[in-house]
Amino acid sequence: MSFRRILAGLTLAAAVFAGSAEAQQLSDHQLIASLGKVEGAAPVVDVAILMQEATANVGKGAAALPHWSQLAQLPQFAVEIDFENDSIAIEPKSYRTIGLIADALHHPLLRHYKFLVVGHTSATGSPQHNLELSMKRADAIMEALATTFAVPANRLVAVGVGQELPLASTDPKAAVNRRVQLINLGLVE
Image (cartoon, rainbow, N blue to C red; front, side, top):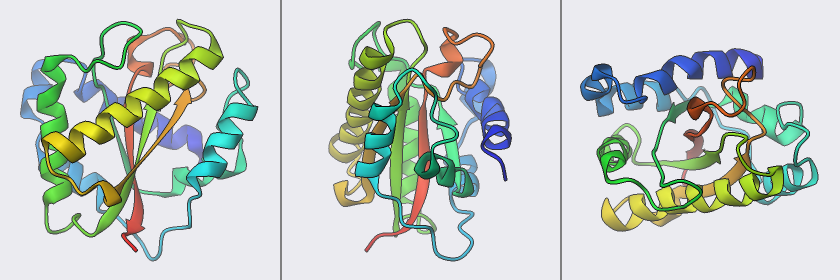
């Protein structure tokens, strides 16, 4: 499955979280269905290499990078989490969404899996600043899941990709590009 196809599918998922009335209908069951589709062993994902690739290619895109493209094969879900402008402060209205994520991660079908929390930004700042901000935001989500919602920290890994993988590639400054992606990395070791 191509990375573009995954991103096109995630556009719909991200739209669910855009604050519409449909967002009120989102349940942990939708997350479980999306994230639980593990077929065989997941490929080994080296987060340090993902960060090296993202850092070395700031402003050039990441979809074609070898380690980022392998993520397209894994079960995933994208959610919109609202942060204060140019900040890692999570807006209170987004805690409901984080709570739904936590409920899904506590479900018996998912509680033995490890997840990559990928932070994305729009292109409103410099590429380097956006990369750093996306990493800090992914860390903030991971911390909220671990501390507020008791998801074991050993099941979560955070990484940022900045503005390099926009959902709305024709409008890189669009709000839909500011999102968090959850990717199932397979069983916890």
